[in-house]
Structures are given as structure tokens and as C-alpha cells.
Image (tube, rainbow, N blue to C red; front, top):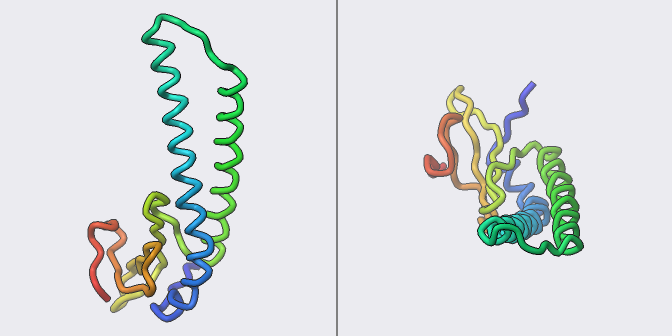
Length: 132
């Protein structure tokens, strides 16, 4: 059964959401950077017709991505345990189910916002946010 949140209930969670989402945004950014580094290395080797690969550095980056991914999964799990649904780690977006005039919608909070002031329909995303 879905738990529906009121804006006040989401606002009460914002301090904890900030603690969880801030590091997640940073971890996500680091994973993207490391993946880009690995992709660049792959392109360099392919374009040079082979080349030398620093296997230790490659393995270290790959292990770091795995570690960060586990940390991200734990953070996502903690947000989901609060009842939120992380939508976009790049901008720290979290949705919470809400009933508005008998219709299921999402209350939409973004990292850095001090309150929950927006909602959107289930078939809309961040771009469809409307003020409460």
C-alpha cells in the first residue's frame, strides 16, 4: 500500500534528505568523472591501434567506481526507507507520493531547496513541476 505524504511531512524530512542527498550528488559526480576517464582511455587505445594500458590504474579506477556505486546504492536505499523516490542524482531530485484532489501526484524536492514547494503528475518529470 502506498504511503502518501503531505507537504509538511516532506518538509520534516528535509534535514535528513540534505544529509543523504548532498553526498550522493558528489558521489554521482565522481562516478561520472571516473567513467569518463576510463572511456577516454579506451578511445585513446583504440585510436592509437593498441597502446599501453596502465592495468593497475585501470583496476584502481574500476574498484573505486564499484565502491562509490555501493555507497550510492546505500544512500538511495536510505532515501527510499524514508518514503522518497530518488529521481536524478545529478541535481538531487526526490519525489514523494501525494494525493491532490483524489489524484496521485508527486511532491518534488530538489537538493538545495529549503521546503517542498512543487508537485508534478506521475507522467511528468522535473520539467512539469508546478507550485503547490
